[in-house]
Length: 587
Image (cartoon, rainbow, N blue to C red):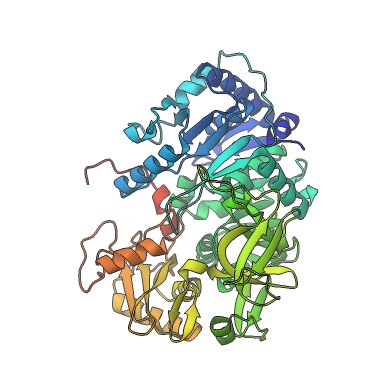
């Protein structure tokens, strides 16, 4: 099998380019893959002087730049493995540093490479308990210029390629050791499912703003096109967070053929497109929606708005993936668009059966497993496979699936328990939610994602700014919904959320909590931390980042009067942690 290192060497094309966008077209930086490969080989020579070689591990902290990407390649060219660390956020410095400390203590890197543009005062956390050496990216670039290109070290298929950390949406981040065999298998599976033309350097151009510490950004939108020598345009996540409309503008300017994002981003783009933002989306051939639950209403609204700007609805692809499966597990058939499965909601939640009912509750179909990967659904108690349309625990296996978690004993079974609930229909996967997030209210099993999707469409609620959870009650649980809003009329927002959830889910929230933007706790990759939201609620300190609490417990926030439904969206809450550097003031 060809490892990603062999693919990088073979596809260092002097014609295809990597473009990292700046504030405008004049400030973009462009390098051919051949130029970047030469720089990476020189960087590899510098890394060798720092003792980096086969078996070494390197952690990197920096926003998306050409030097950072060259450094990632350099680590691989030395036969070593890397971890891309989450970026510091705008607020809550101490929780970020605590997360960084946990990751570095677990990863035990031999070297930490830091971009001083992101962290100018390297905190002690960067060295970790092992006392790892810290090297600035600027010094690596400077040292590489006079250094002869190093010979490429070709790793074995079972050597570690990436130590990827989970987002920690339901627990602390855990290290997932991805071998070169895992990585090569998953990249090949994605390419096979999409078709070779999707990555053909002569006619394809991929574009992404996703952070490189997130598996969809790192593997799906960097490792895959880079290893195939495909033209690639990358936008720093901070730039997207500061101005979301720039994503659509870049698609138009660069005539991108493939892009992707989580569900919330398509909600933001819908508002912009409905406000008549000029954009030409006709070049797109593949648009991935993944990394979080895919709301059929959000998808439909986006496709309706985007069609007026030239987007073919059949280009949309619904994807399901896991860090533990390198990235991709399944996605909808390319060229057919996103399909929904309409089922009887009461039977689904009460009996765990997905009974087809036209016009009823829609769930997004996530397609068949990518080549080489197997998906099954098993009984929640016995672990035995269940029939189609029976809800159970989703398990996956295949060459992309990793052996376990870093520092833990290998998993004895070839089947990975994903922690997700779902069912199969016609061989296609449908995900209902996370097993540990399900709450029992009104005599039914309620998936918080359904409540959040309904709440997110209420007037005044920010796109992606809703979290639902249960708290103990005499019989079952009470449903609580926390939402982010900019509207001053929080009573109206609560009423709108209550009406929307009751109408679409059939359960009335016991309480709706209104927060300012950024008030919901999230992971470094932007995923909601429901368990942490619930903990803060029960502790009485579910508050936003800037204002003191007022009103009942949990607090109601004093807010400005900008309506996110009509105004140009502010930086999305799920990327608030990328909007600026760590606030270094004492907290």
